[in-house]
Amino acid sequence: MVQETDNLLKAEPVRRIAVLMRERGLRQIEAAGFFGVTQPDVSKLLHGDFRQFSVERLLRFLAPLGQDVEIVVRP
Image 1 (spheres, rainbow, N blue to C red):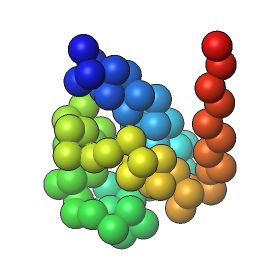
Image 2 (image 1 turned 180 degrees about the vertical axis):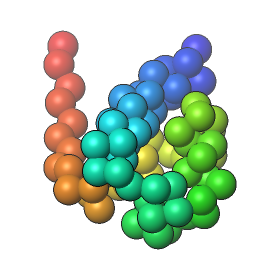
Image 3 (image 1 turned 90 degrees about the vertical axis):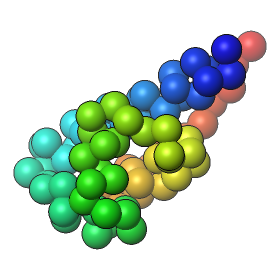
């Protein structure tokens, strides 16, 4: 259950990262430099293998792509 919730939380930042990379024509090697990871790490991320990345780290990847992150918790 915890793993499922974690994966759901990670899915949206990963989707957004992929969209932004595609829109900007950003290659994996370039994104890796922005994120401080290797190109193979970016490849894994984009192919749905994001277990090694925390939610916080994925959210931090959005900053170099010009995105502000706002977290809202609702009842």
